[in-house]
Length: 393
Ligand code: SIN
Ligand code: CO
Image (cartoon, rainbow, N blue to C red):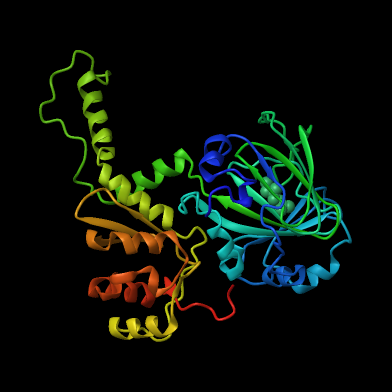
């Protein structure tokens, strides 16, 4: 991404990160000049009828109670029965289904891609909204169709400021500190915890680039589960040097030290934490996997086809990241698995992780390296990389 891009309203990515990221909202008019929705409201409704697609409808009125939540997949008939106004359809992970939205994520490459979650697309007729609320993650809200009025509040939100008895966390009391109308191409960045309330002024589609922020609880339970699963029942607390205690009822300092040491030793291995984290952050949250190609290819056949095709795309069903800890190998993480790679391939592997779409020129002399072609062909045979889609933009 170029410095001073319109995406960030003339800010450099470094300035945006320093002043706004996780700190304060940013409204950017015409952030994506000419951006129009690559999917129509009807097509979005079609996606919401698919079994593997995660979707929701929020009904402010006409449900069993105000702010009713329905979860997909939906029957086509459901859309014919919806009221004229006051509802929203939200579809998660649309970057998987629309190459244009996968390409849109590349504009956010100034943030590490293991932090990026997905592009959610919403459609709402006039007055449609999901109510005033706050999210625990950063989001870029891009207007793609029609106008939406966004009100936000930068005041802290009390834990009990929530409408009771509904399936959604919607604020009972919302006082806006800022108020804007966004038109197609405009974008609003919100850090976690900033209350926001978007209402469609007319047929409206919003594209939300959302981020993954693991909770401390997820980090601890995830890593400790893995450590614990590698242990067996014979590894346990032992005390062959047990001294005679004056109070059998006491848990002594000696016992406490021993327990603390067991727990701290289990957490002490930095390389094990890094390895687990790389796999954890590249795992698919939905459990949906990349589809392997019908015809697996040998390394030679893969290279021939790469040269003929002129490029390759990463599958949106697989997340890619790498760790370079300065050793002889770097570790490529794809879809929750670790692939150790010789340091000589660090540059092309980094490029593979940095970009979703690559041409043979992006790999330069690495295409002469049998180990790299072997790696690419294994990734291809697993469905993690694929040939460019002809109509993809
Ligand atoms: C929407 O697109 O209607 C909701 C997005 C959000 O508030 O996070
Ligand atoms: Co939100």
